[in-house]
Image 1 (cartoon, helix red, strand yellow):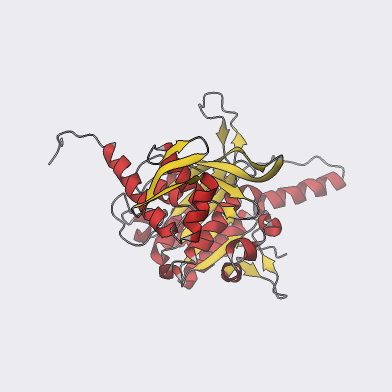
Image 2 (cartoon, rainbow, N blue to C red):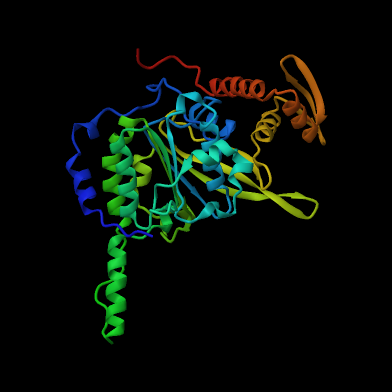
Length: 371
């Protein structure tokens, strides 16, 4: 594993902060291109009001979640959906697997062989083995070099919490050296991440916009020890992440998916805490099955039932109409019917239309204050 010192890269980043950094941001309603799919139709809608994508190219998104809530799985499903959209054929898909989180995921089986071939590490050593970031400076350097190449990319840092810093490594070396000599180590262990992360994001946001790239930063939740806070959970990295990201969302574990007494997956809720595309803060639920992946169809069916668009009576879904055809099945059989008849796209469009109808109904029907 390499150990890089990238002072020169950091200095170059600071030097290149020009008027590009002060360009007008893409606010709500200013973006008209294709959205990057999130991996879930309901998540797309919650982010952008579009069933086909949720993230805007050229932005930063921040995913926060407890362990085993599907953060990495959602990121890989995003990669798989990007792989299906021709507008993103020239994008590099980079997974900075700091946690080595995909060792237990059968990527070719769950996401397809073409996706498995397309996903890259940030770098490779002379033997062709993947090299992931160790320090936050490694991460900065990797993203910066990609931007310098001018090729659009989607970069997933998994996760911020697992990165150390050059300064921390130096202090550890000093502490160990002092201990071996029978001396007391000077100084204390400080957190450089918030400060350096703020500098990096401030500089990088303009470069991401230039290449129309997406940077996803994954964080682990931590117990919030701030006595005046109303939130029980927080994350490392300071306030810069929330300030610079276009979307921030939290993944929460709702329970286990079971077959009899055997656990076969997890139920997850995503709550959007920041949305610079629509301004809306919505939450959606979906299930992730160990042998299948994210259940997009199931989440759409459940949402239609929850909103009383499709009626449910016990284990049966009744008055479920799609393309003018009435479908009356148990939930599982209904999902099978949609898959067997290739109705996924029709269902996605139908859900999108119903979402829009509901969102439009929430607007205040009042005289405009300003013309």
